[in-house]
Amino acid sequence: GASRLLSGTCLPHAELEERIAKFKKTEAALVFNTGYAANTGTIPAIAGADTVIFSDELNHASLVDGIRLSKGGVKVYKHRDVNHLESLLKKSFKSKSVTRRLIITDTVFSMDGDIAPLKDLLSLCDRYDAVLMIDDAHGTGVLGKTGRGGLEHFGIRADNIIQMVTLSKAAGCYGAFVAGNKDLIKLLINKARSFIYST
Image 1: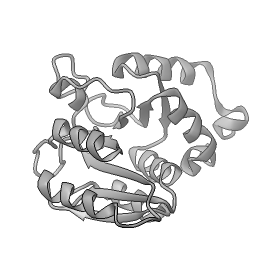
Image 2: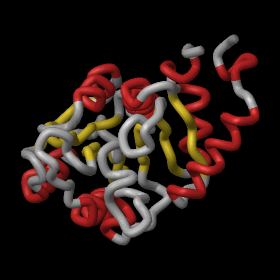
Image 3: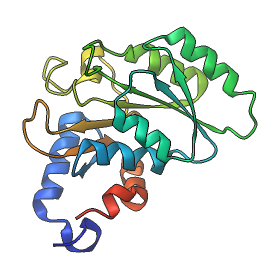
Image 4: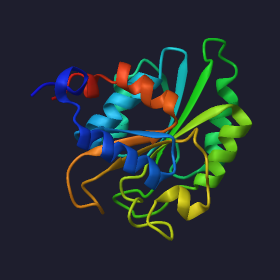
């Protein structure tokens, strides 16, 4: 065997990613070996030194570690507190070195079982020119009329939202994926180290 960028990508990988994208209603998807690898590979790939990351204080450890591995700055906001998050977003405009803003949250928080206010977070993204990344590991297969997760639960359709989902929860198997637009997936294929260097 070899990493997927050498000879490790097989037809079942491509078929699975196509099926995932269709299920998640996104342009594309990329399979990782674990949710931990997906988060620790994706966040550093999309967050550079010009990025400030806004992270819910109860986010999963894999999100926290992905943020630590990135070159972006981090601001932790109080759990599900949209007003606190907005105040931090406003303050971020005082720094001329910050040109990108990334809001990261679990959809369903694994220890408490409560749900992130995704509609409010998306509204803040629109208002403050930020990107939203959700860890939908505990939402997919549980939330939404057809189990598509947090976005379906709230009636949100947006290709610019980055979705990470593990296959080890409701799907009952192994692995994970990131779903979003084609440009995101191309970027991850070329920059996500946990994807590039895993067999």
